[in-house]
Amino acid sequence: MTQRNRVGEARSTDAGSTEIDLALFGALGDLAQRKLYPALYHLDREGLLDADTRLLGLARQALDREAFQARVQSALETHVKGAELDRAVLKRFLTRLDFLQLDFTTAEGYGAIREWRQQGLLRPMVVYLSVSAKIYGDICRHLQASGSLDEQTRVVVEKPIGFDLRSSAEVNDAIGAVFPESRVYRIDHYLGKETVQNLIALRFANPLFGTQWNQNHISHVEITVAEKVGIEGRWGYFDEAGQLRDMVQNHLLQLVCLIAMDPPANLDADAIRDEKVKVLKALKPFTDDMLGRDVVRGQYIAGTSDGQAVPGYLEEEGANTASHTETFVAMKTGVANWRWAGVPFYLRTGKRMPEKLSQIIIHFRQQPHYIFDPDQRGLAANKLVIRLQPEEGIALEVLTKDSGLDKGMRLRRGPLHLDFNSAFPKTRIPDAYERLLLEVMKGQQYLFVRRDEVEHAWRWCDDLIAAWADRDEPPRRYPAGSWGPVASIAMITQDGRSWYEDY
Ligand code: BG6
Image 1 (cartoon, rainbow, N blue to C red):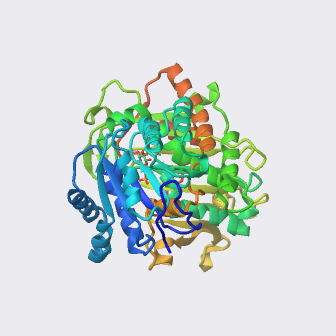
Image 2 (cartoon, rainbow, N blue to C red):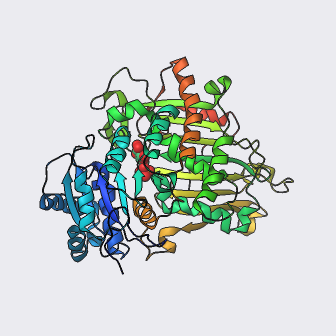
């Protein structure tokens, strides 16, 4: 049974229990409306939110509780599919909400958070910072000074954490002055995607792959994270960041880690994160000669998307027409250790690509001795295609004999295909934020990024950013709706390979 305690003595939750209260800074922001309320609603609908869990929305704007509830209701009506919007659950969810107007950067007013906690059951509080990282430190300090925290309060922070190694260390120091690392949950929402977690199951539960997963059997790895959208009204933010900071430093490097890491001793958060850090430390550093050959920066110009004309990056609303910020990056890198020596990792990610597509292709080596039709030699290797989104699934390309009396021993390439939607038709694939919020509530950190991961990722990116700044070359142009600059195709074809296009 739950019981009332004083702040500072909130009782512990069992691992796995979701008895928490949630304080959400940035409660009227875009992320909250598009992702966080829908995710919490779904958890409620699935019976995964404790009956007494309450949510305090915090924002600068003046709003009363009813107006806030109406805003959240409207967000849910917009962002939850009609068939999944259960009116009884919606009503229950809205009764969990309270609202507090607060200027986040001044100490005044924070006492009201302590009072809000005292009105409830004093269970552990999750503080979610869906605001700029520049004010994470202020918020943590004021929360502490106001007596709103106890030794079980967890803090959730969103990327981007800083702009480079130095600024990320400052942000992490400010958080760390109040919260120990064991209660800091840094979100990389890719880790919440069901298919990304599946990489762990695929690699470490299947002996078939376990034995093959190294440079003896894999020739190269390809990761594409393509987005169809452009900048979507975020020009100011994006132009300071660029695609390397926005996507590679976090999402793509996390995928590289999950593909390249050694098996952890168990599924504990630190066992997994220790292995990921080893990969980040072993990433091949950039050298001058790699810059022109193995790294391509692009920026989209006007083109088409879904048959409609769309503007170029420099013509988007609010654009500075002299910007050299990249909206596309392709690179050839590697992990310098025994498992991956000599195996290139080709990465590419961009905005305004022809489709939204995230996939990883593991290219296995060819047989050491080939006995079939010499013309078909190029076919003769297996590929594992891991489709992260959309149409989540896994396909293993295998070679079989082409059927028919006239075919002799001709080979045919075809997939052994596991499509998650049709294999598990009754299971809704949850959004990444549902999984992540659930894990924070349960106090499990394995899907969150540890401070040293963030810092090693920055260290590696910082070198590249510095080299780009030294060269000060404009990015290569590519038309919106294409797969990026031609140079990104040349980058891989110079190795006698090509980007994998068919699924
Ligand atoms: C975010 C980036 O982290 O990820 C965005 O800031 C990007 O620019 C988004 O659009 C992509 O996420 P997803 O889940 O749609 O692949």
